[in-house]
Image (cartoon, rainbow, N blue to C red; front, side, top):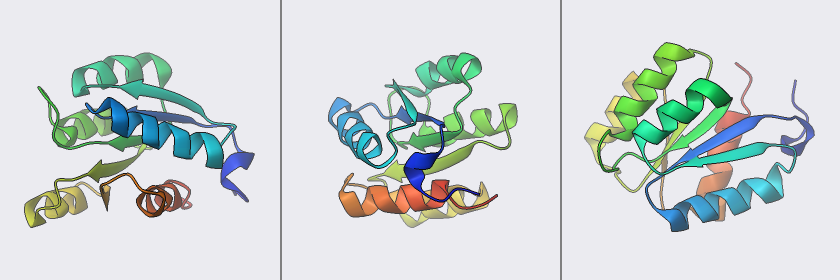
Length: 129
């Protein structure tokens, strides 16, 4: 059982085509979870290649990216590793996206990547399985 976010070593992958968003998310997790290893991917395709070798525990995933969508990427990641915890961190807050996330049992957090939204993502990632 995790007592504090920073007390366990885990691997986080940030998947977002926006470098600025990746930087904000990385800075938040570096502060709150200093023991975590953080990797970044700028596309779904890149994320899948990295996930195959790095096997992240947690993922923050944007929805709208060039090429493969975040939902497609998340689905493929979950097929490979059903225990991976994925948060859809996106500005795409349409009801259809929320429903799709819920149907896939993914947590949905609205951007922008603020302290509050990133804390919501972290709280979900740290929930007991």
